[in-house]
Amino acid sequence: MTELPERLAQVRAEIEEACVRRGRTSADVRLIAVTKAVDATAVRRLVESGVYECGENRWQQAKDKVTVDYGQDIVWHFIGRLQTNKVKYVVPHFAWVHSLDSLSLATELDKRARMLNKRIQVLIQVNVSGEASKAGISPSELWSFLEQVLPLSNLSVRGLMTIAPHFENPEDARPVFRCLRELLTEAQVRYPEAQLQELSMGMSNDFVIAVEEGATMVRIGRRLVGVPKERE
Ligand SMILES: *Cc1c(COP(=O)(O)O)cnc(C)c1O
Image 1 (spheres, rainbow, N blue to C red):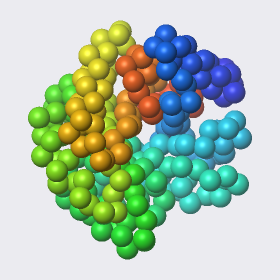
Image 2: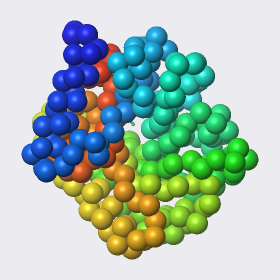
Image 3: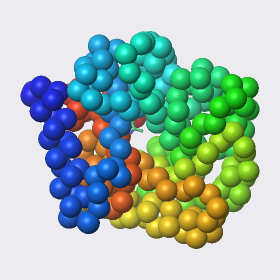
Image 4: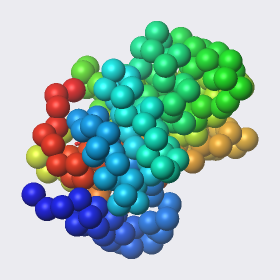
């Protein structure tokens, strides 16, 4: 296993190359280091290497990391299934929630954010592939869901998120990412006033394809921190 700076440089280079192929600028792709499988020491190493955006998928695993002072402002992204009863813990520490997929969760996030006088940035998780094991609303539910969540004043709905199925060949994930991008484009047409710009898609095995298809946020765990992927 190579050292973190090398792994980071390699991931950044792959993002850059994918951007060049599509005439995009890599400044438009945010690298989120998923730290769910590592501890605060590893977060500190990431920070020292210049990574200031981190992702966690469970409050239980996040709580000992998000409260540490790393000497830098970390932008924390909540990327996993979020139970309503955990929202009160998550909202003070996390700037972004990528996994919005129910009205009850939206309402609770809005309420807790209002109590703290903050706005929480959210992405709507869409289950593009339709796998039963995956969270997210179905593409056909997106329009009525947007109608319901856009008016919530302490939420900033910023775009869409998806998790592609695991494929041996990441190329097979391309239609999933493309579908999410097309949904975002349609959402922008339907809601020109909303700030819908973000596409959170792509993980260690498929982020290159995701960037080629327009990802503005990639969520990368194993390739950076070098631990086995846990079962979802
Ligand atoms: C764990 C996780 C990731 C990162 O996965 P890797 O394969 O380790 O890169 C990305 N997104 C979500 C929602 C995750 O739970």
